[in-house]
Image (cartoon, rainbow, N blue to C red; front, side, top):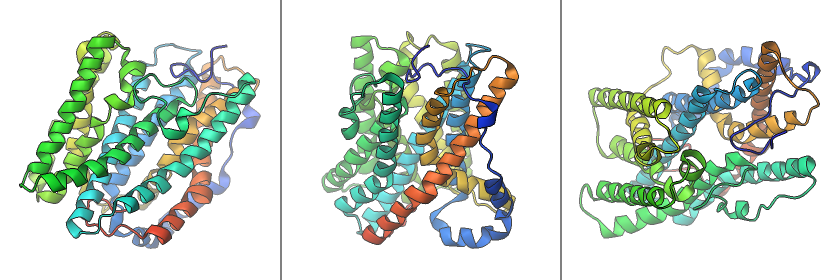
Length: 408
């Protein structure tokens, strides 16, 4: 049987019907959410914006749908469309992270409250506990599966895919290394730029220069090594740092310029057109050999998604059914845990002595996977992630910035 840690392959459905995850308590609690929603939203305050939560929820659901499609491999090997959903979801996460962190940095610099150590402490207390929890879990799963311990030294410092392909186990961690590298570099660069450039528009010039530098590195890398599209370019941390900068640019537009609703709509339309162009390249090109797909496609997709964020940031929940609001906020809150737990859930299911062979069995496996992943994410969020975040806020204080999303 192919390795369950192969990034391009997840085994067929391997779950018994009696192992289905039943969550009646969660469903009952969800049904009661509308009557409790208003005070919960008041506790969130303006720090959480429905439009951005909707995008975060959309991103993780796209990734979840892409991974759920692996359960249909016994029926078809043509899952490219579903793989495209996962690709789009991760790219949206990257751009959204740049938008949120860019808003925090801009707001704190303007208010004079920025402290580098405080920024790093808040970021790392937000991301590292969950990461190391699931790193440990995947180490144990690898040991159970293969009888040996994996090499995990580089995973401890997020260098497992710095300038080389990501190891095949704990494959979802590739995006976390890109993100942590951005968190490490971005505030230092912003401090340096703030001291060097005092001119209006100087910040944008430096951001565009950073995009150009990373793009040049990506082009040179492709010309020199002729890598594969996914493992050789998409998942190489050094080649993907510019993705976040497009989100920072969108945050700068929202905070430094009072762009009109009309301008936001035109930007969103341009972003939608760009996303459609990305889809054409994704599905019609030979990605592993196409120069554009391995280089400038990774400029087009974040630029297109970032162009839609200013409009999304202004989307309020008025007129949205309360149950939809509740579901959106919950999925958004659980999104980080859900990203990390879903393939761990799948690997755990692969240890069960059962193989799917019919459409109904494949559908059952996918449904169990989705339900178990969401239940696992909710559990981890409420009993592990949330207590740490509360402790973080007590130790470091909440963001005092007036950025686009101080709740990040």
